[in-house]
Length: 405
Ligand code: RM4
Ligand code: MN
Ligand code: MN
Picture 1: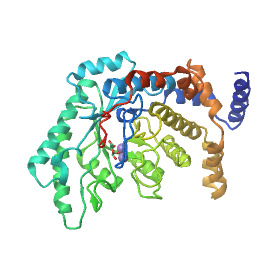
Picture 2 (picture 1 turned 45 degrees about the horizontal axis):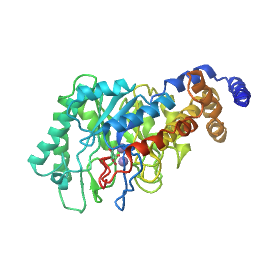
Picture 3 (picture 1 turned 135 degrees about the vertical axis):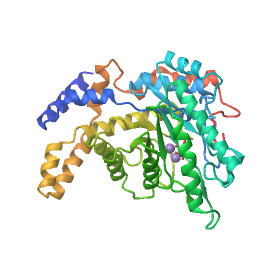
Picture 4 (picture 1 turned 135 degrees about the horizontal axis):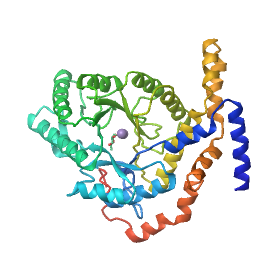
């Protein structure tokens, strides 16, 4: 502890010298909000195998219990996204109250339009009007769930697409998509937002109906002010400049939220910041350059072989680190270097912030609010994961909701 105080004092002095208001940075770190996904607490797998994890949450109440632990340790994760029907219950008002009793609220409601036999040719783009009706009914059900649970976000990802050229008409699928979304949009109460996620592949391989941010953006424009784009960091082609997309959408008032995760090859849903921490930092830098106040910061991960709660805590800590680094960018120096055309000088201002060890700053921000400075150590000391492993055991039929689970 004495050591921490010394290291933190040195860092704080250094940051103050760079003209950074350290108290303000700590406040902003304490006020950061990161939503965790219910599905990240349950068993999940690849198309090859789902390994059941001892103690993995089997239903929504266990998922909420685990999410409450993540919030208690980090102090920044008070809401939990739900996936319907994976998390369906009979009494939504009761679930809302139960969440509140754990210090949580219900976050984004994610309709699931990809796991029913009806959806072989798509959901809202399906050529069969009966299937489209069914998809709309499910989304309307989700709007209803959001109303009762107090959630303000419907987070929509479509698995719609085709596998072969000529399989269906792009133009007609687009018209069906717009019609269906208009109907759902019209049912949303004021203040509720529809966030439209894009992905350029999987499970369809020739085309997807919402492949990129431009398509989501055009749809959001068409629908109205309550529709915005959701950026899932794992849904881009290799080498895509994600932070530029963030900057553009933010500037247009159309950035609704994120699904944070990391990927190397496909939509890997690994721990955020574990593959490309520089990208995560640059995303936060753009968020803080624009006005990112209303942007929902959500995690979308599936932990296939690693301990689920620890993985979630690690993700949140990596997100906090990216945020901290972005908050200590010397913006005056950056603007001056940019104006002077000093290419590498400007670049180095960013790299300076990125290379700063922000761990003492984050530790101090936690200590100030009565938290353990190291949430991973606190989790391990608490024995919570061992306790639920004993109580819940290994699920014979894992109930995470995940496809092969
Ligand atoms: C999709 C997408 C959605 C998520 C599902 C499970 O690839 O990222 O957001 O709900 O996976
Ligand atoms: Mn996602
Ligand atoms: Mn995904």
